[in-house]
Image (cartoon, rainbow, N blue to C red; front, side):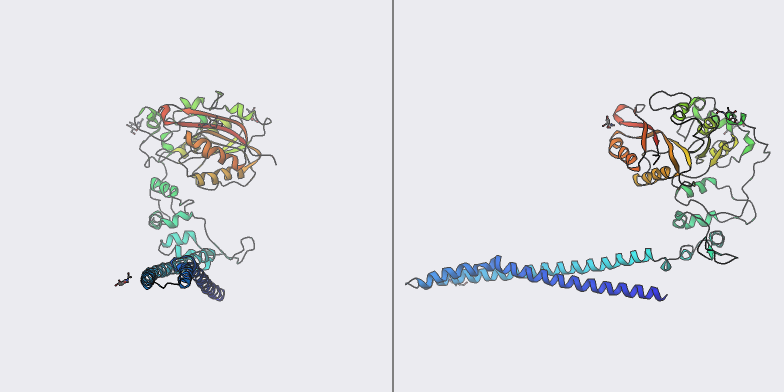
Length: 449
Ligand SMILES: *[C@@H]1O[C@H](CO)[C@@H](O)[C@H](O)[C@H]1NC(C)=O
Ligand SMILES: *[C@@H]1O[C@H](CO)[C@@H](O)[C@H](O)[C@H]1NC(C)=O
Ligand SMILES: *[C@@H]1O[C@H](CO)[C@@H](O)[C@H](O)[C@H]1NC(C)=O
Ligand SMILES: *[C@@H]1O[C@H](CO)[C@@H](O)[C@H](O)[C@H]1NC(C)=O
């Protein structure tokens, strides 16, 4: 508390000092302006007529009419000068009030910076003020039963929760409304939207998710990799389709869906990454061959749809974690049923891996020009972070416009510091050449040193 007061005193003192300095500055500017005005402005006639007067006075004939004329014009000039001075004063006054306004704004800005760097003024509890009791209980803080621990540097602990949750308190309250110990509401769609809005991670809940009726043991490996699971393996409420037949057949239905043919394992999924077309589409064998045999062992597939990349990599004895969102389809349930590791996180979240750990990161379609540039750059740095030295970033068909390719993305990827092992660009022609739509694919290596 004491330090807070002294900080605010210090700040008001700084503010006054600044104001004082600015006033002095104003005075100097004002007086200089006046001086300049007097010697170069309309008043400068003072020098010029004097010489004429002296000429006149040396003249033997004193012409009173000329003198009067001169006097008249001098008087007029004087009147004009006066009004000009008045104008100048007005302008100076407005400049002065502008400076005053600037001082006020500056001190306000100072206050904001002060508040941001001084968390005691802005507590977590204030933020949680009007969320439900259950939310508060979930998030904390909770006193540690064994007291202060140096590992945390604290005697209390908070549960992780996305900053965006606190921007959507009404949604958070709705999410945390359930019967403790009972069945959770089937609110997957709402919950995923909340995640995508930045409430990620969500707080934990004390309820049981609805359990599928007639659940049977999963299909064993390796058959599970290429099998459609039984419909009884999940809850269908959140999805338009109510069974796997519908999902598999969706590729023929009109309308656009994320990963429209991803559940059709006998179709395009079956041949993905098996062949290298020398252009945008690389083969898994060709990419793995860029490294000594067996050195690519663990990795991440960002936005991996139904998990086929992980399935193919598993066949190469490479373990891949697949992040996927359930965009009107049970992508996470499906990946798990295949015997692969699904991770329900969006592309916004910091990857939950330690630095210099993964051998490979793959991403297809998810990273593209829909992501704000700044956010994409942070994501690329995060990929760089989790890759081990010599690790590979396989970027599969990054979509953008021709105008963005060389202007935005090439410099951005170079900035992050990857080494290009392979790079291909190609035009996307299905919507017409005039759309100037492009893909680029790449294998980028994190440098060894
Ligand atoms: C000087 O100005 C006055 C009034 O403005 C006018 O009556 C007078 O005639 C002027 N004198 C000359 C010489 O122009
Ligand atoms: C699957 O669901 C669709 C509607 O989504 C329904 O028309 C169809 O009869 C279902 N098929 C099976 C095999 O349950
Ligand atoms: C994967 O590992 C298994 C068991 O170690 C081995 O038999 C198989 O040959 C490996 N497959 C590949 C593609 O390396
Ligand atoms: C990008 O730059 C490369 C090399 O300078 C050039 O060959 C290519 O045509 C450019 N691509 C686009 C889409 O402008």
